[in-house]
Every structure is written in C-alpha cells, then in structure tokens.
Image 1 (cartoon, rainbow, N blue to C red):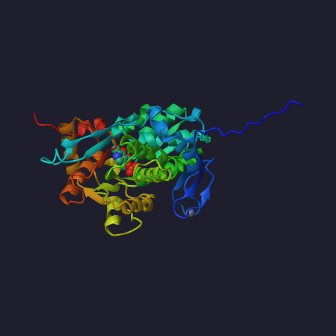
Image 2 (cartoon, rainbow, N blue to C red):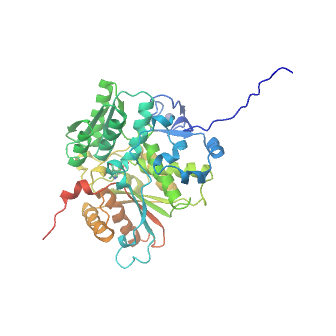
Image 3 (cartoon, rainbow, N blue to C red):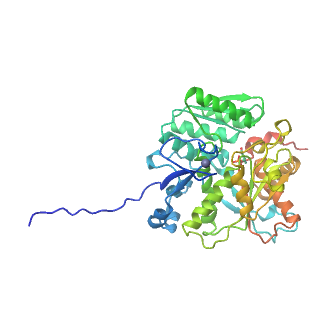
Amino acid sequence: MKPGYVIVLFMVARFSYLNHLQCSMCHRQYAADQLQTISPCCSRPLLAKYDLAAVAQDVKRDEIARRENSMWRYHELLPVCEEAHVLTLGEGMTPLLAAPRLAPPGLEKDVRLLVKDEGQNPTGSFKARGMAAAVARALELGASGLVTPTAGNAGAAMAAYAARAGLPAFVVAPEDAPQACIQQARLYGAEVALIAGLISDAGRVAASVAQQRGWFNLATLREPYRVEGKKTMGFELAEQLGWRLPDAIIYPAGGGTGVIGMWQAFAELRDLAWLQSEHLPKMIIVQAEGCAPLVRAFEQGNTVMEAWPSSQASTVAAGLRVPMSIGDQLILQAVRASGGTAVRVSDDAMMEMVRYTARSEGMLIAVEAAATLAAYHILLTTRFLTPEDETVLFFTGTGLPDIGNYSFSM
Ligand SMILES: Cc1ncc(COP(=O)(O)O)c(C=O)c1O
Ligand SMILES: [Zn+2]
C-alpha cells in the first residue's frame, strides 16, 4: 500500500470574529478590512458585526474569567484581528463597587446602588477603552497619523494610545476645554490646536486637518471602533454581576457612545446566550441643564435630535457640552426600547455631588460622573426608580484633574 496522506481539517479559533460593518440606518453592509468613516449611503455611524454563531461555538463563556484582567479578555468581540496589534495600557476591568452611602440620607440601608469606577482607566477616563480599540484598529489598517476633536478626555486618551502605537497625533479642542486634559495630550506628544467655539466646531477643524495630512479622523461615531471599545463596559458589567444585568444604568451622555456600545454589548450577549436571564436594564441618560439636546428630544418624543444652539451651550461639565450627536437615533432608540428615561441636572447639583461622593465614599469623580448621582437622586424622588432597583452609575472619569476648581472655607 502506498503511503497516504491524512489531511486533518480543523478550524483555528480566530482572535477576532469581526465580520463586516453595517450602516446603522439602512443596514447596508460594508467591508471591515479597510479604514471606514461614516456610511456612504446615509452618512450615519457604521456598526461592527461579528460572526456570533462561530463565537458561540468556539468560546466558552466561563473561560473568560481565566483571561487577562483588561478589556481584551473579550477579544473575539473586538475589532483588532491580530493579537500582536493590540495596544494596551491595561484599560478596562474597572471595579464595580457598592456605594450605598451615595443614596439620599436615610436610604443608605435600602438602596441597591453600584458604581462602575471608570476613572481607574489609563488616562483617567472611560475614553481609554474606545481609543485603545480604535487606535489599534486604525494602525492595523494602515493609518499614518491620527486626529480627533475633543472635549478633553478623548484627546488625552487618543494621544496616549497614539504614543503607544508610535503614530503622530493631532488634537483639536475648544479653548475652554479642561487644562489638565490639554496638558496631558501635549505630554503624550500630540499637537494640540485650541479653537474658539464648541466641540462641533473642533470637529470641522479636525476633519480638515485629517484631510490635509492624510491622517485618520477618530471623531466620535465617525469611525466604527471607538464604540466597540466602549462596548466592553457592558460585557464587564454582565460578567462582574455573574452574567446578569442590573435593573438600571445611568450614563452621562455627550456624544453617547457608551450607551450605544453597551446596548450593542447586551444584544451580543443575548444572542450568544451568555446571559442568565433576558432581563435588560433601563438605559438612563443624563445631560446638563445648559446643554441637553438628547433630553429635549426624548421629552418631545422625537427620534432624532435638534442641535442645541451653540451660543447657549453652557455647563461646567466639558464632556457634556456637546450640542449635536450623529448617534442621536441609536441613543434615543436604546433609551426608549429599554424603558429608560432622560434627565437634566444643574451644574450646582453636579458640583455638590462631586463633594458628596468624595466625602461619603472616598471616590474622587469628574463632574460628568457626578451628573449620574444627581440624576439618581431625582429619579428616586420622582419614583421612576425605587431603592430596590439595582442601579449602576457610570463614573466615567476621575476628578483629580479638576481638583483646583473647588474652594474650601478654612
Ligand atoms: C468624564 C466624561 N464623562 C462623559 C462624557 C460623555 O461621553 P460620550 O461623549 O461618549 O457620551 C465625556 C466626554 O468627553 C467625559 O469626558
Ligand atoms: Zn445606510
């Protein structure tokens, strides 16, 4: 008998199961293997789609617990295709902490209140997650330089990951953006342009810089992968709660990528049958009284938002000074489909809640993060939430950079 060959066919598990991109409006499909911006068909965000059937077959949910303690433990559901292309500073797997003393006085014993402390991410905010994913993917697809408009934290995060990638970076921010974030971006080696106006104006400048230099623009939802990094907040929440989800999530929305990302995460987890129950949280967004275009659209029953007049957009929370979001439909859809709501809070309430959080639980948070606690107190008063509703506040950033903004009487 002649020696024969036995051909053994086996599938090698892939690092990422990214399949294609999809227009968030009309669902037309686009290739994921080249740099993409917004959808050419509808000028709307492109969302990443994965081969979930293959993930379900190849990945055991409980295997994830044994993986590294960063957001890359969910790599099959992230867009970076080669393991060697991951850029990490240790982002993700932030603590989920019980914080009962953040309840209104008298309710400490009754509330089921948790906070996700995103200030512990590299660069000091949850923006690290989105930028870690988007910068790594941009590098993987051949970007030669990176640009972003920013309210502050996103620019600092992009600059850090660009440094890690060895790519040049250009950040465009309103001139009143937090000094600490601007200095941070500069220290990471980015060029920074400060402009008169809001983040929407910075967006126009960033787009033209990207075009002139042939660099890639990472503006919120104008490329598909920052939202993928933010999605990991939803995965972690589920994993940290034993693969179930809370009753409510409160998130401070500017451009709103976190809401869109988490809602995507929950849909993927449900499709993978990784959740113990089908129960999804109420998605609650909070904005500042001085710039609340999403809240206004929600209250008026609209499916899209009207831009907040730039001349009137004013709040101490730089990350919430966002007059328009290209993700408006996706955000409003998630809030409504989940049975959530939208709340506006005053600057005074946010500042007070920064102090309250520091004093009551030893957590130093950004004003944007404090907006979630102000909203929680309002929603208990209006009885939209009860103390028994397990509620997670997204503390999106550390308060350390803003520490000089608070005065103390001796
Ligand atoms: C600390 C903080 N929280 C919340 C936000 C709002 O995030 P998004 O624009 O993703 O809704 C920002 C944005 O800059 C921020 O810096
Ligand atoms: Zn379309």
